[in-house]
View 1 (cartoon, rainbow, N blue to C red):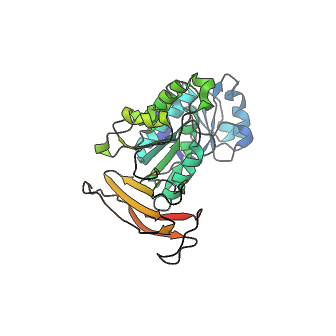
View 2 (tube, rainbow, N blue to C red):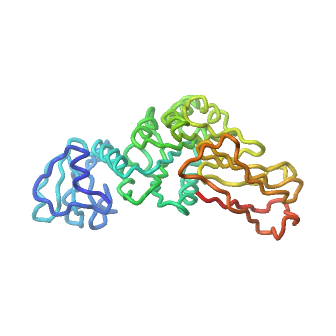
Amino acid sequence: MIYLQDLLAATGGSLHGPVFADEFSDFCYDTRLLNPGELFLAVVTDKGDGHDYVLEAARSGAAGVLCQRPFDLHELGVTCLLIDDTRQALVDWARFVLQKHRPDVVGITGSSGKTTTKEMVAAVLARRHPVFANYGNYNDRYGLPIALGRLVADHRVAVLEMACEGLDEIRELAALTRPRVGIVTAVNETHLAYLGSLEAIAAEKGRLVEALPPAGKGGVAILNYDDARVRAMAARTRAHANIDLRGFRIPIAAGIGAVQQSHRFQAKFACALHHSQQFIHAHLLTRGRFKRFLHESQHRVIPTPSHVRVIGICSHALKSVDDELPQGTHIRIKLRI
C-alpha cells in the first residue's frame, strides 16, 4: 500500500489540485496493465515519455498520478502529485518506506540463480514470518522500488533479488535496502555485455557483501563455495561469511537453504544451519544408512532473541533408524525459526 503522505514526505513533491485519493493499491507505469486504484507513474526514459499517457491512465481508473509536469485532473477525480524526477522520487520513496517499516532484509544477487534462490528463501521464511519478496523482473534500481509498493507494515522480512545492468547498481541497491543477510549465487558470463569481464562482474556482485553489517551486529554473507570468484568475496565483507562447512558444503542461514544428495552416497553428508554465532549440524548419512541425527551447538553460541532449531528429519523411505536409504532418496530437514 502506498500512502500520499509518505510520498510527500519522501520526495518533497507538491500537490497539483485537490486530493481525491490519499492511498493507492500499487504502482503502475503501463496503462495496458493498470488496475483501478493504482498510482500511475509518468516515467521518462529513452524509449518514451509516460506523460503522454497520463490522461489515458486517469480515464482508466488510476487513483493518482506521479508526474513531472502539472495536469488538471480534478474533473476526473484523480490526485496529481508533482515531483522533479519520477525515477528519483521512486528511489526516495523506497528508502523512506523501508526505514518506516524496517523489515529484516535478505539481499540476493548473482549472474544466475537469483530468482530461484529468492523464491526458495521466501518460501522457507514464510512458514514463520510474514515475508515480502519482489516479483517478476522488478529487481533493478527502478524496478525494485516499484515492487516495494506492495510492502506493508506486517512484513517482518523482505527477500529482495538485486540485478544490475551497469557498474555500482548493486552498491546503490544495497545502500537503499540495507540488507542484513546477503546471498551471492554465481559469477558467470551472463552480464558480460554490461560489465565487460568476469572480474568486473565479480567486483560488482561483491558490492552486496561489502555493504552488510559486521558479524557482531548480525551480518551474514552466504557465498557459493563451488564458485571461486564468489568464494573469494569472503575477504570483502565484515559480516560472517558462511562458505566453509564440514562435509558437503550447503549453507543454510536462518532457515534458508536446500538439502541435496552427495555425489558419493557412502561419503558423510553434512549440512549446517547458521544464525549469528550459532551452528546446528545435522549429520545425515553414512554408508547408505541413517546413522544418527545430531543436534549440536558449538560452545561459542551467543544467545539471540531469534534462534533456530532443527525439529525433525523425514524421508520418503525412512521407517526406523535402521532402514536402508537407497541412493537418490529425498531428505528434508524441518527447521523452526
